[in-house]
Image 1 (cartoon, rainbow, N blue to C red):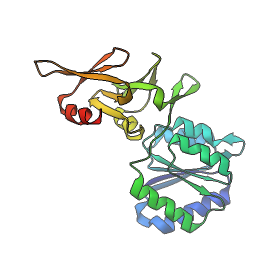
Image 2: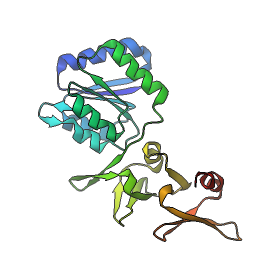
Image 3: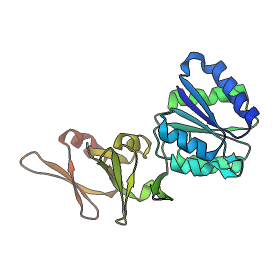
Image 4: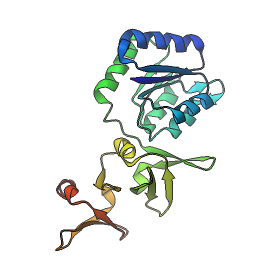
Length: 229
């Protein structure tokens, strides 16, 4: 397990590290502590992790900025904070759990068990999209479909806007709500926006969306999608 702790209080960070090593032992393949927002951003950009422990208040910086940026990441996040109100808001971004401070070993154990048993079922309500130096939050309910694009994806909204996201289609699909369905190796569609499935005599399938747009559909996805509609 590859773990990143983002915590600006040295004592709190080391205490959490000690608990995790006692509970997980050799299951930890790497564990990194970052004290700042920019340090954690750089580390995540250059390294793969499985689990992030994030304090929402980082010496003047707001942990929410990191949470928004990583809302479509393949790793999961556990919030560690003394501010319950902020932590509750964090669940909109697909966080796994909230561990209140002061942190106890028993509470960390419960969070780890949640990760080990339920980590494939966490979904997000927002996607954080970087455009130049700006960060946009897109509500997943407003997404029409997602298309793979050169190891990244294009996210198309219902209003016609399109954004490029630096994640793979597989990564995006893992955290999108259950009403999103893969219809082709290149497309994931919001099933609430499907008008009908069209077939042709030659065995070709396509999905027609409410706005009239048609997307190619793989034959192997037909039966399961039809059962969902």
